Structure formats: C-alpha cells, structure tokens
Length: 432
Image (tube, rainbow, N blue to C red):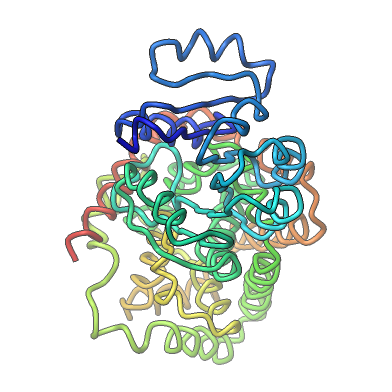
C-alpha cells in the first residue's frame, strides 16, 4: 500500500539521479516524480514516456507533491538549487541529497527548507556505472523522526546497498581520505603521463598487476565528469588538509630521492609502513589478489619480461601521508569506494612484499630511468593541491579536461577492464 500512496521525487537527472530513479521504479514505487533543468523538460518527457516516471517541469512541481524528495545535483550547485526549490517543499516531507560533500548540502537544507520538513541525507559511495548492490550507502539522520528515517531507508533499500549510519561531519572527514586524496593521486599520475606525452602502457616501468590498477583507475577517473571530483575535493574542508599533506609527502620524499639520502629515505618509508600496515599484516587476508592474477587487466604492449623497476612514489607518499596525519585507512573501510579499496590494496601489497618494497626504495634513489616520471608526478601533485587549496573550479576543470583529452582514445577499452577489475575486488570483498 505504501508504494501506491507515497510519492517519490528526484530533482536532477544526471547519471546518478537517473540510476536512483530507475532502481526506485523497478522496485515497484508507483509515483515517481522527476525533473531536471526546465530546458530539458520536452526531451525528458519524450525520452521517459514509457519509463514509469512522471516527468515534471521543475523542482517546484516535484517539491509541492512529493513525500520524499531527493536532490541529485552537483555539490557546488546544491545551495543555489535548494534556495530556489526548497520553499516549495510539501509539509512533513522528507528531503535528502546525494552529493558527495555533506556540509554545504546540510547547511543549504537548514537555511532554505521550511521547519516542518524532515532532513535525511545519504551518499552512495560509487559511480553510476557500478552495481549498487552491497556497496556502501551512508545514511544521515540529521533532522527527522524515526518514522521518517525508516521510510527513507525503505525507499532506498531498492539499491540493495549496505547502509551505514553516520553524521554529516563524520561522512566528510572519512570521504576526504577514501575519495578526495585517492582521486588526487590518480589525477596526478594522469597529468604526469600527459605532461610527458607518454602512454604508460607503452613504458616498461608500468608493467604488472599494481601498474594495471594505477593505469586503469586513473583512466577511469578521467573518463568521467570533472565536477564529480572537483566538488568533493574543493568543498570538503577535511579534503583540503589531507590533499595538502599528500602533496607535501610527495615533495618531501622526492627531495630525499634526488639527494640520494638512502638512510633517511628508507627509514621514513619503513616507519610509515610499520604504522599503517604493521598491525594488519599477518592478522588479516590481503585486500588484493596476487599480482599475477591482476595481470589480465593490462593495457600494456610491453612484454612482462622487459619490465623495469618503479619507484612507486605515489604509493610511498600515500603511506607517509597516512602516517603523518595518523590515519588508519582500515578504519575507513566502512565508507570504502571501489577506487579506495583498490588504492589501499596496491599500497598494502607493496608494503607486504619486502622484496618489491626494497626494489622500489632502490629505484627511487638510484634509477635515473624513472626520475623524469617522478619529477612530473611531484609537479602534478603540487599543482592539483594548489588548485584545490584556492578553490578554483575553472582551473580544476581545465586541468582535468586537458588530461582527459590526451587519454580519450583508450577510454572505451579501459572502462571495460576497469569494470572487470572493480567487479573482481567487490566480489572478493563480499566473500571475505
């Protein structure tokens, strides 16, 4: 009976909004009202005429009649959109948003929504092309009765995700690490390769399972929309601190490398590794499957026997960043994304393998073949950190799109491999 009576509304039909809407309709909710910007109304009306969705002109029309309203807009636009449509919210309705940064969203709701509506926010920790089943879904009961919170959970149970209840401040602190810093590491790799005018799959330093994760996930990010990552990094106060420290860790390690200060460099790397991984190695199964198993996800045209050592500066700096900020990444697995799990997995894999770790340390200090790559990675990480620190969305967009254009011819092939890789690590997670 509930599915016959309650009206569900979605304001914003981008990739994630459309994914939510389709799952809600498929679950049997009979009254699903949707809208996007008014100029898209005629197109959506025709496109979705047989979808089971009720396409309305704008957020006013959705807000006036819906019992559960979901804002699915970019983080940088949430304040403006809620200011326009929030006052039209139906009395006693539940309002939530699925932006990746919750503080601006919650502040917008508190400022522009009537006092007689409930606020239940949420965030699916994956992209629109990933199956939401058993992926983390953060639920935030900010201003709502238990009855209304339970109603929101019943609606969103159609995603079959693993629900985790947090405050919005806890959410932003954890996602700063699980998403923002992870993204900057991959973004910096892509920018470094583009600056070098170098495709990593043509280079002997980027052969093997760990390298496949780096290349596939970097290209997967650049094949998506820039604003997804920009909003999460620039609008989350916790993210700025962590991104700054990651770039600083890259810088500090790179300076030791070019001065060939072996003892200081090695001690710093191992101290970070002991702090982050010392307690888990031997006590739990590794996140990743074997390096050999990951070989099948390779784009490389270089035979594996021609592989050259890699300094893995990006991974060594990640451990150093976690150590400096006293972050335990395993505590954040409750809000893991597929990218974060893979990123943590390859870092853990490196530090679990003493022979590979020693090879990386020696390569970082003395292998001149990888020095140019490391210099460009250092420069790229500094550039991304500065872009986030000053909060310049336009600069972020230009940096992102210029690199994306360089790799665009390989996106289709890479996305197939990347999806298989994510499915593999997700399946392994659920079997643990």
